[in-house]
Length: 157
Length: 422
Ligand SMILES: Cc1cc2nc3c(=O)[nH]c(=O)nc-3n(C[C@H](O)[C@H](O)[C@H](O)COP(=O)(O)O)c2cc1C
Ligand code: SF4
Ligand code: FES
Image (cartoon, rainbow over all chains, first blue to last red; front, side):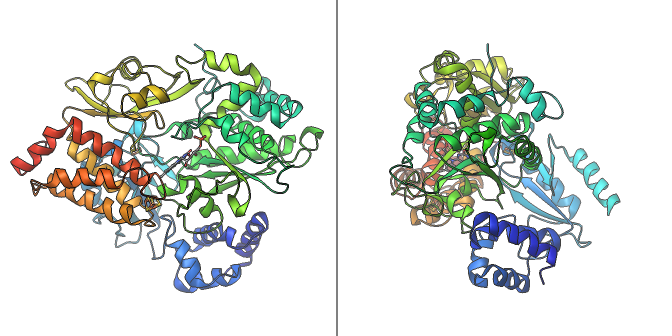
């Protein structure tokens, strides 16, 4: 169910757009901040609130890569796989990350802490390779640096 | 050498509104409000400012294409394209993080110039720092009266909305972006009618790149002649150039428009890393043709790069060195484009994965003798005019040029049945 807080935020977006569908991406993002991902049931709740059909809303949702339709880990590790990072050796780093986390791209660790996904150029190409974890950017990455960063997230869990 | 776009950059937090004002900030907006829309557009046209989003379309011409309120009354929209996702590109991020008010001032002036009362900044999700800095700049501007209703008592209204996208490269394409703002799948649509006539929610809509807009306040303040004189070429102004890849000092610099590739690579980026040789460069992001040694003295402006067989694009270069596999690099690019295709038109949806799979097979030692012909076939059939948007033609640019300049590397993959670099 949408909380009153969510409804208020979504309503503000609708008002801003002057059109309920125009607010649907914001609506999904608002809900996802709270739930972490969007289940079928919640997709229906949001759709109803916006006056859209669930299929229509899911059609929109499935287009964008920051909308999760499956449960994800507590932290999302986004690995830039674009050209500058590739030139700077991102593939070796990915091998290391895969081993360290024990998951491939698209996978979630058994403890539910991390989901690893590929991402397009993060706009940090002069400091490649780059990754993002949740809303934080990490650059000039090496395997050692990655291990230290991951350790911090584990400690914080 | 003047560097108007980055003059206010400093380590740590960017200028607050007060500090920005002290350095002359929002003076351009005051002047613009006195001039009126027609005079602003005239000034921008005279300056020869060309769009920094990739296509280099003259900004003044674009602005004057929006119908006047007399001919077409009612709502119109202004959009800043801050979706920067072209691989290898990071100039707009620096501009938004480094001086958010400069960008915002450009957005407000642009909106006023086309009589738009609503402006959207379409920002990619991953630019979280830019997002928080823009949010504070916007709220500062509202409270100081540079945004909102009756700006500085002139009766002019401009409201700015920050839209944080949910991702996908295609969202940066003009018509896809509009669909996305309308809460739809970000699929491009036909360019007829033009967005300046019928864009967001069917209303006249103007869209500009972040760097384009950052130039606007400076042109208003200093005039078109000053702007033209900043440049080493016909196109006015400075340009944020950038270099990534295995050079000594990757980074970004504001330089006169028309600085040569050699100067940027050698003097700014410090040349190649020790032990590596230069082999090629994509001058303006992932969707531009490779240039090679013989092009090093080409000026980085729209016409010169085009004459050399490529595009200035975003002006952010990606360097290929002699120990990196060109086929692997092109495979990485085509894999990207195949994934980011929105799937709307067949040549792009079906062709790009095919191209990517051929390159992958080549990398893995399964290349076939006729692969090069098949790749060449695709560069023709995914080229300009066959798809709804420029994603597929853009994807073909690095491939078609690599097939010319690095042909032997492709052939070696096929005859040796392996990647010689692995
Ligand atoms: C696939 C694709 C992605 C694009 N992404 C961006 C982008 O992220 N930012 C941008 O400013 N322009 C992007 N463009 C170009 C825009 O469509 C448009 O030309 C540009 O924003 C116009 O602004 P300008 O006239 O100021 O250059 C993209 C174009 C294509 C075909
Ligand atoms: S060229 Fe590709 S990305 Fe562009 S509209 Fe066609 S399918 Fe979509
Ligand atoms: S290519 Fe990875 S940050 Fe740009």
